[in-house]
Image (tube, rainbow, N blue to C red):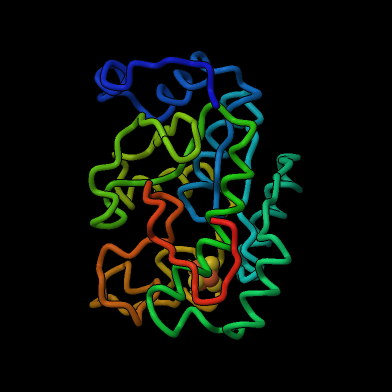
Length: 252
Ligand code: SF4
């Protein structure tokens, strides 16, 4: 649990018109740099933030939640950051015992069965590893944008995650998709090759697909579900999104 006490309202007022660079400077001034961690799925937004910090002379502590169901193209971006910038990425994966039980009880493609099953898989492969990833952090930089989905429309620049006991900072909350790509192209940032294949966002291979222009961007994820506010649980402060299946013994 962080020892900092930040006035969230004051911080958001102070940073409401700040650029992403200015927000990042605020983060590294406010918190002990070794206790600041940036999460990425190696989508364009996360890649832009990693590049921005490196260009500011800050080698960030970056972590990746490796669900063990990612696309090869995603590992390729990680590898390119390592090769080009010497970036060391901390990887956090699911507990092998959880995966063994999940797949033994429900099969490897159980996430297609219903929303509860899908959320259980996301919980085991993403949310539980995230808890471990943030255990030694005071500040969590996330590459969320308000325009990404209905559920993210109210994303503040600074908030406090009760679930993880860290301050959460979203420096590009105000950015549009165009802003992201302008930054990526202008700075020759490594980006995920899936975008050139019609994927609007990057997630797990079985649950992410390319979309046609007429479809909404979030139709790329969990397209078999109807709720437009669908999220994996990483960015939702709601411990009730997952129910233990009958007979399951996952520690939640
Ligand atoms: S996105 Fe799909 S494969 Fe990945 S953790 Fe969630 S349900 Fe499982």
